[in-house]
Length: 171
Image (tube, rainbow, N blue to C red; front, top):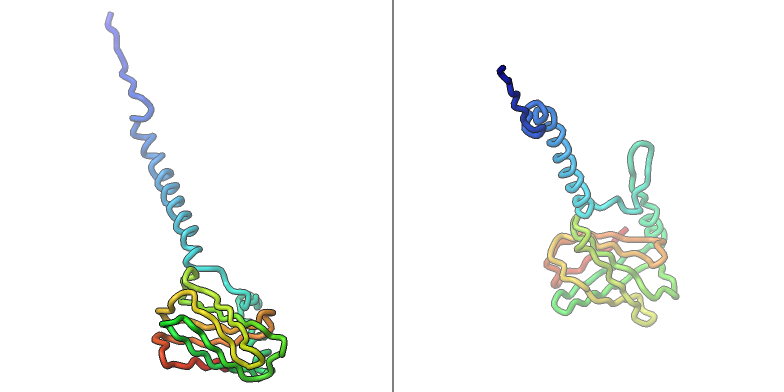
């Protein structure tokens, strides 16, 4: 009597199993990599600002705040002293007497981590405001001057160096 012994290999060594599982595992690996990239990319590419409004299938910029600044006849001159960190703003136009502070938003490129807000305080009854820079500005930046109630805003784009330079804000 002869016995034929069949050698059975374990399931994880079967070639057809890996032929079927390899594309599935590769797709899952690439999917998780893309998920982690998209989650980390949200920090770099922030969502749209409130000034963008839906217009049909696209988006348009809401310029009502800029129009309010034009209607009030507002303009400003900003002097930045990078050594002391002082920001001096001289306003022109129809300012309310009870306006005590203004916000100066400094947006540095697309990196939201480098953006900062400077609170400018009014000097007496004058149309001058004073504030301090919280971070040095070393790259091209968009300066947005806003009222605290978000009624109006004026924008200006500038590049360093800011010494002996006056940034003129005109709506």
